[in-house]
Length: 366
Figure 1 (cartoon, one colour):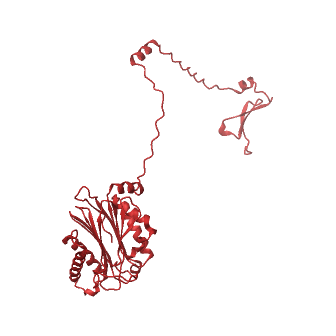
Figure 2 (cartoon, rainbow, N blue to C red; figure 1 turned 90 degrees about the vertical axis):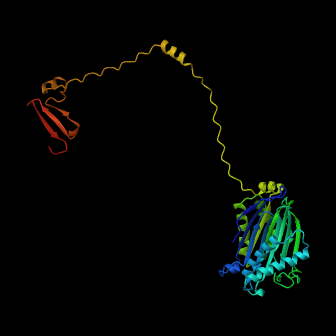
Figure 3 (cartoon, one colour; figure 1 turned 180 degrees about the vertical axis):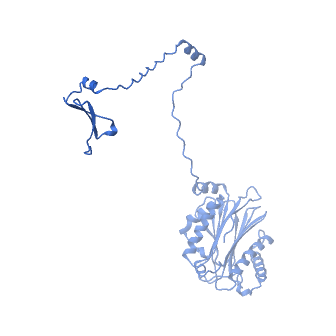
């Protein structure tokens, strides 16, 4: 489950544009059993506010998934209907729990089964103020506009001070254990909200990954930002049993955009530069009139005549007496003449005594 990458333009020109990248994945414990992801994430915006929330349903409860979904829905409903900017924190806590109870009751499930933690962030697109509210073991980080080391904005808290125990939104003491923080976004690069499955983000180990995710989201890097979120969530999903959900909120502050564009913006491959053409001496053609004059002045050279081929002489026929007269008299009684190439194994013999020709087969078959 992931939130579609989206943007929101702030109403005031001094308010940075807001971008969101998110991903949620079933933990290893649930994945190997083909069970559903009991985390929920949500994003909402209108002309005046941008809202993101993440909730972690308690796996030990039968209503875990319904509780996390209802918690996210209650977060949006609360942000839309309450004046959270001018209301004091104590009044705000009571109002938030009242909205949560109303949405829980609409699920038609027993109230005691709806166990979930949640974390809500609301940003005013008019004033640039933000409010963060947390119940239970979800966490949030904030980064300044220069993408320095992330700081903890909200972290798990319970009255027992034990990491294995937490508080849920339906607990009777949820209002006493609810945390609220306020600030302004003008000097911020963004925020990261996450469930307990990604609690390692609170450590320095993943500082660079957090900065890159927020930086890519701030410059609206789209696919690159989503890939970074996917990889980070998958890392925790493979290494633990809990469901994992992460929401990154990026703000287009000038310093953040400059730094993130330099460090994280995917670089496009540059086309190889073509080699310059070699310099050749310029040849200026002579004017056509001058060429014509030269053509007239220069007499055309005489073409050598091809020598006439001599006419073929007629074949001469020789009698035996003429052959003897021409000097073929190496033997007094007879002479040998090899005849045509296709009779290579034959000789023609002439007898001066009888005046007759005779063929002799040299292959031994006379």
